[in-house]
Length: 105
Image (cartoon, rainbow, N blue to C red; front, side, top):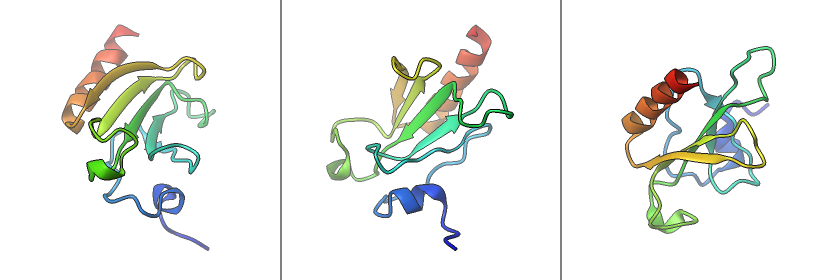
């Protein structure tokens, strides 16, 4: 049995630890470009997400977009049409944006 965190199984070459964000859990999938944290608004349906935080590689040379930021927060209530809310190198900025999203919705 593999006890490694999901992101380490899906992205074995990921070059940093996935951050811990209250209310979010690891939803990494190997077909994506990088690991992600997802937030299920309803604990009864843990695969239905409202927000996703994409976590990119620390080494810009490993990123799909080398000039991109470490984090991207998306509203994914309509998964086919995700809305970018904030891109930042600061996890604190992302967490603040999550709080603003919660107030606005």
